[in-house]
Image: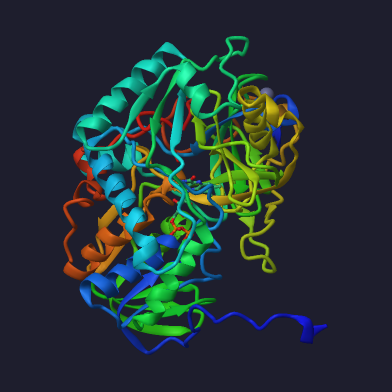
Length: 405
Length: 137
Ligand SMILES: Cc1cc2nc3c(=O)[nH]c(=O)nc-3n(C[C@H](O)[C@H](O)[C@H](O)COP(=O)(O)OP(=O)(O)OC[C@H]3O[C@@H](n4cnc5c(N)ncnc54)[C@H](O)[C@@H]3O)c2cc1C
Ligand SMILES: [Zn+2]
């Protein structure tokens, strides 16, 4: 049998043992950690660095998300950050020499109430002022772009229109991680899996090393990219984060012929749906209400989003749930990320991307690498400092950004 | 779906409840004296424990009473249910299980049954701080 199997394809990265010391250590081998390492090496010439991952690459939220990429956020700070990210998404397949199936099939955010309509139109206006492609669609235009959507008024919350961002879309999340990992490896970055950070070594208030299950490793700088586990790491380092970790679930159906040409999100009836390249319908909605690190949630949350999906897409009534799963998302109270310095010297944090950080992977990596390399934030991430919870300069994207993905 | 034992109504589906986040966070005693940092802590910072976590729940479609619960945030095991105002029960950590199914200490009143001693009006031993009966700490 074994002789009938094809050759194993080339490995995309090596699995080195940790060196005794690095110029910088990134904790977390999800998309953000890998993108950060990539930009540290590429933009800042820092190649004596390592990414430490307690499990396997992209085994956290990176390969559990529903891969929606868009930049139509309301506030200037967010629009700048996410639009920068979207532009990087457009350039990365070529730059990383890896076709990770970034598909700009557009994203629609449905409006179902007069309040939704006003909020949506306001956001379209704000997006246009910020150079983000955004349009308002009436129900007929919605139907034209996505014929399987039910726009009749016989449903509980009829579709009253939608915002549409044509450049938005989806990508294959695991391939994105592998694309970054391969380039990091080529540039000399050590990618170390099965390496769990269990503590930090400090000299006064300055971090000088990390403790791991594979020994203590010295480092000049530490960048935390641990998503749902950020609070746990911050606690090890001796500071607090305004983060709550929640389960976030998603599901896929069996494979179907292509029926769904775009991405549809509804905040009000609460579901978002796309169809993956292979043919599964991919759906998600909101977090489970309780705090949880269990990478699973409660079934009624899945049931609720399926009910919403069937109401909006009657054709889905005969589809089946094939698989459901959950991740651990790091939510903040203003639904915006934290990217910047910490109370510990030479330790930096990138977290709080919550339910919507896949789309931010490139710009998180880009700005966080700048922050780590130079010790000061890039202008794009300066507003996303931890201090905003003290100054009150929150970036409130709750609702404002349609739905949090 | 969690099966939650309301102290007043007994075991009910999670869908009957609302989550209230971390328990035992008192309102500031002297709000006008707080620094910006202290306000930030009160408004935006809560523990985000991985493991046994004391949290508030509201039985919103039942008796509409708040109560506290100790729950493991990794296994989701409910370790204790106890009234508002009562001190947090201690759980014996299970040496075999890092985050696991710690059992409720024998002297705790709070195994989640709906006995009258832990109904919403009998608060049992009240926390040292000054919250009024039934306050959602
Ligand atoms: C179901 C679901 C759907 C989502 N849908 C979308 C979407 O459609 N669009 C979107 O933009 N975003 C979405 N997101 C959010 C997005 O996935 C996250 O914001 C993003 O992946 C977080 O960054 P990351 O990839 O670096 O996180 P992760 O992949 O979670 O990386 C963090 C890593 O840190 C590691 N780690 C933790 N502790 C330690 C330690 N002590 N030592 C070493 N390593 C450690 C973890 O093992 C993990 O691999 C979704 C998330 C989920 C769960
Ligand atoms: Zn009750």
